Amino acid sequence: MKHFFSIGFSILFFGLFNFAIHSLSAQVNYNDYFTDNSLRLDYYHTGTDDSEQVLFKEIRKEAFWGGSKNNLIDKFGYGSYLVKVFDKTSGKLIFSYAYCSLFEEWQFTEEAKSTNKGFPESIIIPFPKNEIIIELYKRQFEDNSFSKIFDYVVHPDDVFINSEQTVKAEIKKIHYSAESDKALDLVFIGDGYTKTEINEFYSEVNATVEYLFSIQPFKDMQDKINIWAVAAISDETGTDIPQDNIWKSTALNTNFNTFGSERYLTSSDYHAIRNYAGLAPCDQICILVNTNIYGGGGIYNFWNISSSKNEYSHEVFAHELGHSLGALGDEYYDSEVSTEDIYNKNTEPYQANLTTLVDFDSKWKDMVSPDTKIPTELNSKNINIIGVYEGGGYQAKGIYRPFINCKMKALGYDFCPVCQRTLTNVIKYYSE
Picture (cartoon, helix red, strand yellow):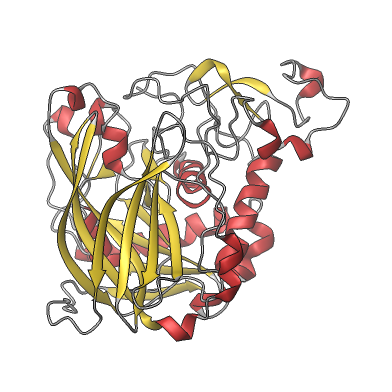
């Protein structure tokens, strides 16, 4: 069982990816290439610990594009999968973003050594006006390079693009700051709430948002964030707990015991989740599960999930949002996890709050005082000093974090200055 938090992180040891194409972002005019809708390419990600395959399912057209119309080319270099979208006629790169997935985490489990397994995933991009090429790349463990694993040509007039709305749910604006292309849109979806419990869901969304806006950097950036609540109705209350032989019929099919970890709360039904998320403009999916059991999980640009009724639910939610929004890594190192060693110490992790010191200049070196020793000693004098403290990413040696304590390490702490900077930059990316 993991200590304090789940392994809801974006794993796979990748260093920072230096996009040579950053300068192109200002040259892409959104209205030249895209409509106000989203294109969703659904697929199944299958494989073993050392193999993978992308199996196309279908293309869907969704009502809203929630992302920026100004920042169209990813500039962060986080994540383990990279999507590139090219205008087919000109060959111009017109959109890109990165993400992580549940499949990649599963690849580092014992089961993956002997079992071929599949997980549903989706690529989400603005809906194109003209024919495009979608390419999907995977970051390689050995050297952080990206290799193409899938491509697909999309014509916007294809009669097989599915625009059916498969689910219905009430949508509420909880907090509204600006039009969706000028704000970070967090979409909260409930799981394990029956029709008579929906008011509990709204109440718990409001309480979670109140907590979020009480901590930095979200407190100072409320005017750049929209909050939506999607009231998915489940047949039964709660969630699956396989170790106790408890199985519930719920809208999003969430479950504890993911990969054998008692408190890792996830769902392997990503397409069902996307069906509900697509009912509102969506940059980040936030799932609240109707249970008082401690747990959660967060994966970069995929989703974050937390129980809604536990005494630590709000702190767990914020921690998981650190993973899903900012690609922040876990900073604890003295707990049991469900995966094997996951960082290549010969390269830099892509997570902005972890370093192997292979290329520390690319991390938070600019925030470290010249008189602070690297590595930095763990003592009471340094409790509020940005430094380089050994221990992080589930490993006591060889991985370093920027602060002695942080919300990415333990309960009861704020996000450290490095994590706050990272989250601030991501929120600005969505809203400016």
